[in-house]
Length: 265
Image (cartoon, rainbow, N blue to C red; front, side, top):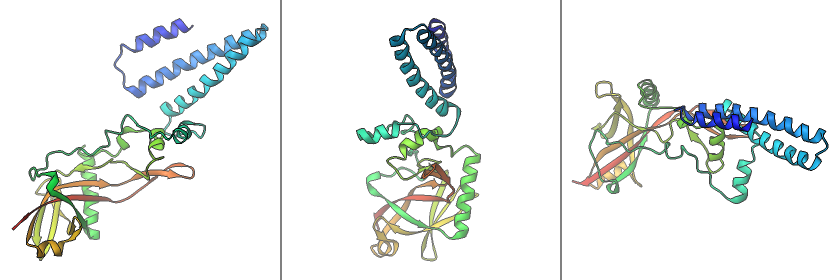
């Protein structure tokens, strides 16, 4: 029986199958192996071979536990209260490292406004009106529709998210966000207004710069410093967090984070 399962396992290794699908196939094969273990355990115990039978029974129970966890992981989006992994991480003070942890990192694409030295840029504070906020949410929908933004938690399952949430407060569906395809900043009526959109023709105001680094925009203007919009990222949106009954998902507005470059006039 085990020779047969090993042959199938080797055969699957030659096929290019998506990881989760292959995991499901392995889980089915493991279930067949578990049934065979139950059978031989029963045969040992019924024939009076108590030592070997009890040993096989313990092995069968342990493997059944891991089979159960794999079934929950590969066939559902839920987590199990019987999963001891988070408890082991806390006991050994281990920070979980998931395979997709690096995929959620913000990719610093080359902005359309050109390249700026990161050492000479600062985060800016963008304040949006309700109308501008409504457009930001509409812009996020457009980016999702065009495939420029994904809101699937980087393909991470709830089980993996639960491990990551042990050391964090929340995980956004869009990760760290994406660079906007078009953005610009214009000085109008004494304010630095940021425009954004899928292109220049459809760009609309998304907010006003009120702070650069630790300085208010009024202090920056008074110091005769010229500022430029170096980059604009769409972030926020729905997110997941740990609740009393497991992982919860909550809706939230999208927002825009900006990076400001400056030079003395």
